[in-house]
Image (cartoon, chains in turn cyan, purple):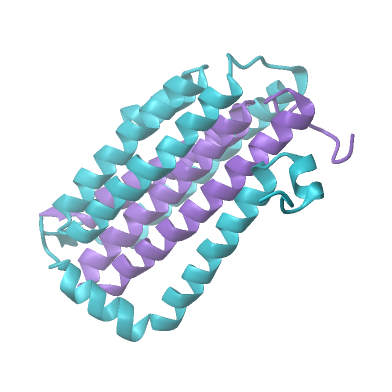
Length: 161
Length: 100
């Protein structure tokens, strides 16, 4: 949580990214406490590994500096902060009233074996799994097309081999 | 025994931090990181509910959310690079035209 607050306070994007890595690591530990070993491992590999490396490379590539505030951004801050606080208080109030406080989750309650998850993933959720693979493929192609230089796309495949 | 309530509150705090960052920050990369923070807050509540109801499908849903987040990060960062090539800026206040 301190990492999440730090992400907001820091003005330089590199510092925000590093604090986001702290949040990811803390969440992975939280998943381990809940007994979800598979999700914790995937969290570390995918989020703290792949996604954050992508972020850091982009920040370094674009040479991002400190952000500067303009007039319209102050308006967004003035209107947004009270709105978010009101929404958070509403959600917390509903949770307080509607949930029984005694409902506890024992530490390591659920056996999140990769074996069981794989059985679920490849039997019950097979169609969504395959659809996500297509989604990933489309995302890769879209990212390559978007990030390549415009003239390279317009020129098409290279003729000289 | 950790009450389920605590996990939900932590997840709500993470989500609120994400929304706040989305509104306050002016750097497009930091805004993108706030979106990732929101996704993580929702993931935490998914895992907490999965542990509470002894249903493994919650963890499978977290897996799908992570896949979508990875795809979204790849495409989004590519868009950011494309925007930076044409605008030479990362400030969202200066990116107010779709066509130059």
